[in-house]
Length: 211
Length: 330
Ligand SMILES: Nc1ncnc2c1ncn2[C@@H]1O[C@H](COP(=O)(O)OP(=O)(O)O)[C@@H](O)[C@H]1O
Ligand code: SF4
Ligand SMILES: [Mg+2]
Image 1 (spheres, each protein chain N blue to C red):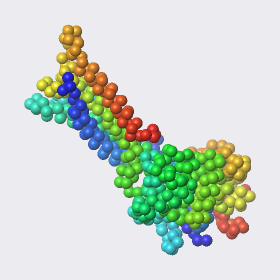
Image 2 (spheres, protein in one colour; image 1 turned 180 degrees about the vertical axis):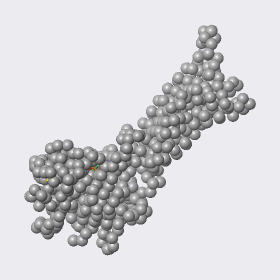
Image 3 (cartoon, rainbow over the protein chains, first blue to last red; image 1 turned 90 degrees about the horizontal axis):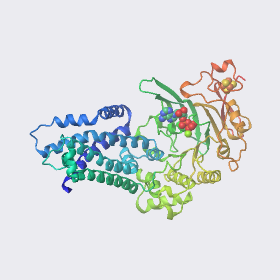
Image 4 (cartoon, helix red, strand yellow; image 1 turned 30 degrees about the vertical axis):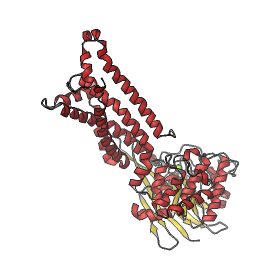
């Protein structure tokens, strides 16, 4: 059961998402203008696509002769290709709203460089949001990976993940005779709830003033 | 007295879009502003909310680019510095001379920085001093505005509104500036605190040899601190006169109504009341042609709907400061 915990897969996906999300979202929000508009249109486009069919299509397009490990990383990449959009939106939104805050103007009038303003004045005040968004993205990744594997299009046995384990629970008769097959589902629920609480806790810890 | 700053034909437009396919609209936030600031005086910029006071302050200090015209700073050493023509790197040294105090004492202080670091930030950026010397300078500046040394390690949220505004003042003054633009510096404060902060600003002015540009919508506060008043309406300067003269005999109908709406001229007894004038302020993107004030002016006549009265200079005050007043046909 413990081996079924595919958090590392989700973590890798979230790290990639974070990377794209912060770079693209931050650039978009701080400088605004046409680049921002273009990025926002791309994000809207990606997000307007129905995700399950998209994942199914991308997953199905993966060569059958890839090793389990290759498939695993490819799935992670696919998940993060969509996952960055949410983080980019969060980061951009924070940059946009912070950019016009008086304390950022004050830093500009102090003569601070863009780099100093971003790293010293802006990022610390939305670190808590990034942490929260990132921890809250992990459950989404786990769910997506579980869903894909459950449908038989993500990770395949012999790689063990909760999705592949839950595949065994697809049949109502099997379920009736062995309800324990649902346990991986319960684990998903518990882990996701815990991660949500963890995210909330981290956010509170990173932001003691509760802005 | 020597001229410290001159604003020449300054204009600022914003282009706004109300929707993806809506046409761009131009808002004329500032139209052809002219004014000079003498070293040591305290001009106030007044007008109803939305008339462009903040935009003017931000254009003067180059926090945002202006659309046309010039802002020229005349440092003591002589020479004219055209602030509006400088890029970010070129303007940096002058940022030590011209500083700003913000309206909202909460949002102008970074909630994630300690008070010490907030006030030390300008010194660090300009590499004025470091180590022991920096520490002393920050602590002594904070002491001058009434923040005790044992409180410098706290975060802004631990302070009251009035104290936060004092911290903002310390940040502005720590670089030993020449000119300080105070944008609604006391408007967010309780009336009793307002008087304290105004007195503090007066004291600091004498001590540091400062010149303030005092932006406010509150004529009571302006009467208390300013020695000259610049009245703005819809992005135009409509009157510019020494305080005594303006309060005694307003020349522009707009100034007249502003004064009529003013009950008691003592800031310690007044609530932070907004000036009120009958009628709606027209939308900037849809500004009236002719005199900008004609939609609300009780003296308006046909001519006002097509022509704008010119400003003229007269010498009038006891201290011989020229006033710029509208040439009226009433
Ligand atoms: N960044 C901006 N974009 C568009 N319009 C703006 C912007 N900043 C200010 N304005 C408009 O310019 C006008 C003047 O605003 P402001 O200078 O803040 O007035 P005041 O400080 O006198 O209340 C207002 O109508 C405001 O809506
Ligand atoms: S020009 Fe006409 S409308 Fe404008 S203030 Fe004078 S009298 Fe009133
Ligand atoms: Mg304002």
